[in-house]
Amino acid sequence: MEQNWFFPPHDGIRLGDLADRIGAELVDAAVADRAVLSVAPVYRAKPGDVCYMLSRKSRAELETCQASAIICDKTISPLVPSHIPVLLTARPHTAFALAGTLLHEIAMRPARNTSLKGIAPGAFVDPTARLEDDVEVEPTAVVGAGAEIGRGTRIAAGAVIGPGVRIGRDCTIAAGASILCALVGNSVIIHPGARIGQDGFGYAPGPKGGMIKIVQVGRVIIQDHVEIGANTTIDRGTMDDTVIGEGTKIDNLVQIGHNVRIGRYCGIVSQVGIAGSTKIGDGVMIGGGSGVNGHITIGDGVQIAAMSGVAADVPAGERYGGIPARPMRDFLRDVAEMAMRAGDRQKKKKGGTNE
Image (cartoon, rainbow, N blue to C red; front, side):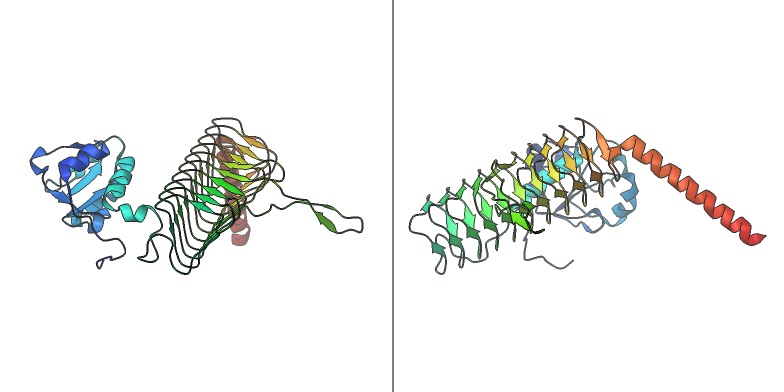
């Protein structure tokens, strides 16, 4: 691959220092002074790159690997050629993620669109807004009346921060995002085109067969260290708040309805839809394309398989899948039975043809 000027290599980190910072053991201490500059996949890693390997299925990629180090666990390390130093850890995926944050810090948040700092010409900041020192507002961004923005936060081009919104410190609000009726914590990342705090979907039957809009006067509360993907929408509450808990990571193209409460350190993958007033516990993982019914409770630590339809409460610690979602063991049994029946029908069809 040609040089990637979007994410240039690091000036260099000693391999010994990298091992210490990612919690890995450098098996050959003699190469501790070797410099690591970038990350790369195993098959095309070159000197200066660090890569990682999780499965024996990738062993063929080692034939072309020239990395300065490979991160792996003790089951994989015997496969690594002798010319490649090993960074040994029981958690290679986590260690590689940490290495990436050190070597490519610029890639951890949406980048600046201009070289300007401070309040750029062409940005509009209402005179009643309050911005701490070291806030950046890029051209064509709008900061509304009475908004408050903390130190180190960047509001990118074309973003809209509505009246009275409060945003904490060290946040990144990317290009074209809009934040209304919301309180946002510290170190929050909101990617391009996200829509936060618009009114939720609520209507009552009208007297002549139409629908009457139900007023939405709640807020969105986004706690510290949350990341929200591009073009995701989070509706404000009807009368209570919509809440996204600390450390939760939300992918692109997710819809979160009014009054939803999501716990801490959850992971919600692309194209998930969560209907209003659902309560989701801490540490919940929801696979892509799943739909979650409104007014239900999903307990702590639940895992929902991709493309599932969750219609009722899910107890804490369970793994569910399918439509309607059910315990994974039941779902897999049902899938196996359907496959067997399909196979039997196919056999009968072939038998009838032969006759």
